Image 1 (cartoon, rainbow, N blue to C red):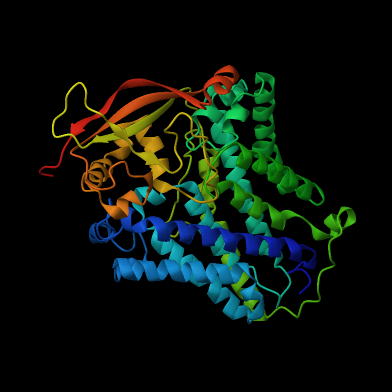
Image 2 (image 1 turned 90 degrees about the vertical axis):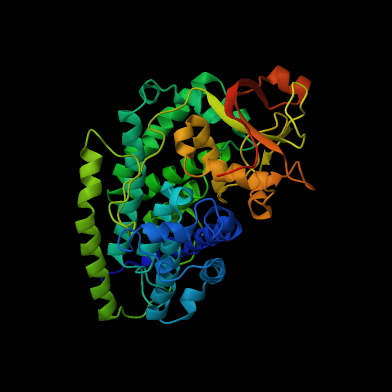
Length: 476
């Protein structure tokens, strides 16, 4: 079945599978470290309460059958172990059907987590990981050459990811059209990284080149992905380079890394061997007929489900990130249709004094990733996902984004809840709980070069006003 497979893509498939397994590992690990405080039995948005209110067909998950923190942890640990095994190449050591079952188990476990994760898992890279993970089930292993149809479905996913993001920008904020969005974005992005200050201080003409290159990567390169080789390989390479630039400039969990992983199967190994010292493809056994039938069926399924994302791409009211089915298959993607010109941060403070006076000393809670202390250099956390820190960025944009979880979060801090405090960088009240907690809204801006040299401060901040007035323990 020469029409069905192409051995020249074996190395791209290998890189995709190992990289995807590594990102699954990060996803399960970040879940394992944070779920008890966020969605556990005593979490801010408990899973038991959610599954009691939502039907299984609306959010398919094994946790509709049973939930306990211990069972959830078992699922997450299994995901960590299985994804580590796949990243190490375990799928190539088993029969084809067993390989498919391993990838299917990984997908089902992560789908079960995302579908009960509520606000904490409502990010595009969660759906992207699930869609890529579903396609990985049918990509095969060393027992068969890469199936051409699945390679094209991965390319179709990469096209929708990048082209959707490009369209939402052109249709959205005017600064994308006049090439000025990156005057602000490096400073106002959700989770700046250690190099974000330096990117923000690049000359403005460089920022305009950045925006123009982004348009080429998200509007031009995706179209080139659908053309014959070697043009498609060059387009994939250009996407990889731009994603590495984004990785250096900020923290977007595993979004950029997964985009790179998705670009690898679009690179033709035959052309790549002409410029790089790459090995020749191995000799693959004959492709089983049952496997051909399964791949054809999945291809038809994706083609049918593609109707809704295509209609969305063509719509003037394009949705930015949306799953048209509860299995997160064939989604629509996009990011930063509008850019914030100003950065706001919610700073949470507590005091252990019995009464509040004008001389009350307030101690600030520190977060692991989001900006707080002005002299602290933003850390590199991606591809790890700090879910609370990300939600704090949305909360600063509007309290409406925090209605469901912010009050319970403050309550946990008033209790000095050890599980919740693990989400933070440090607890200013290590022995006794605070008597009062308040939240202040600040405007943050990167310092200039002179101020950085003089004060060693990366940020300067200005108080905007009270976000939450002082509260103490009392009735719910």
